[in-house]
Image 1 (cartoon, rainbow, N blue to C red):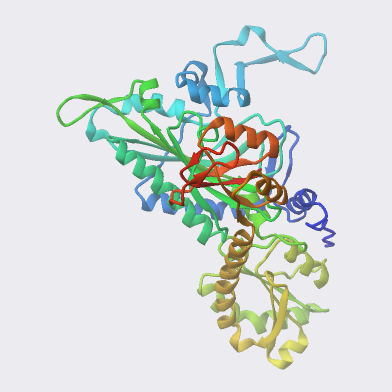
Image 2: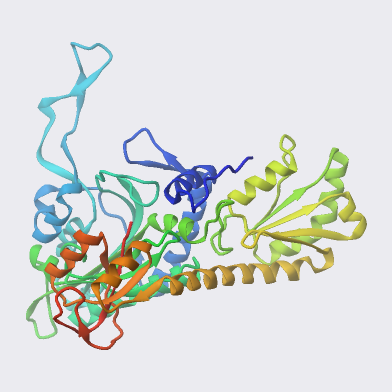
Length: 490
């Protein structure tokens, strides 16, 4: 397999698109803006899903499933949410087709099948879920409700890009109901912390955390907590969000509970989610000019063995040589496979597994058997060495830990080196053009935020919770309580 990838330094966008295809992660479908996630890409998503699902359950959440279709009247009930997603909605107006008499073999909409009420294909599920919660919640004894669903959603994007922005994508969305404001706030912060821990320690992607500005927060939320990652081209990527919804949806759907004194109170709410966009973050954080680089935690295949042989007898000898060591590796819980395909040469296999980002590659030939050795290649550093095969398991255990750790440290160093602080607008404009996070004072007004966005294409990615020194806004000169993170973004 020839990699023939465009270099990141030449055209980062083209490199990304080529890599998604060549690494066999996904491809464009016949439906505009939608993708086919291929088995290798879906195996990575399954690892993301499995780890997150376990974390949700550890924190007391249960999985459920709600309908794909939302009646338009329910969707409109919470005005800010409806307004925020209106331009991205796909709408079902009819439920049947019929033969087109003028064009035999073709179908057309049966006008007699017009729906009494149009259905929105869910862009998010708050409306249908809170209409359901109204039936489930009568008393404080019914609270809290801590639910999550793994689902697909549709947002009719104009400009699409595999994993980063597609008209249909996969995600998880949590929806919780609480007695008090403090409980709901605690939930929203808890999940954002969970996302931070998962993306940092499992995906080896460092993030900054905090809240969104009013113009950037989720439509219908009182507060949006976020994690933001920095990609190698200097653009920010929103990796996950957790929303404190206040009582907005409870009031929109009249969801009340009787407290311990019998008084009726509106329920407090949160919602939160991450999506297949994390696949894009994974590619753009760790990928290099040779292809995908996978943290061992996320690799569907952690170790691949490429035997070097000419005859079937030589292949069998290699398998016999490796068998006890492969069994030990499997017993430790690592995924390992011998690539014994007869119709591909070793060089082709090396390139294929390299572009797919398999963390560790082993190569064995007759000479290795004679020398009681094995060649070990680590994908992250593109380094190989020959070791005594008796030391293979110890070496594998070290590499699994070390590759995961080094990928995180490399990404942390990149983020640190590309995060700058400024005190004036001229310096801000110079740095934002180069890419990266820029910390600057902002007066808190949407007017100032919009001016910066219009003039530089940079947005406020995150308002950190930690306090910094007060100062003056780089645009208005008015008082600013803290610096916020700006960046150009996906």
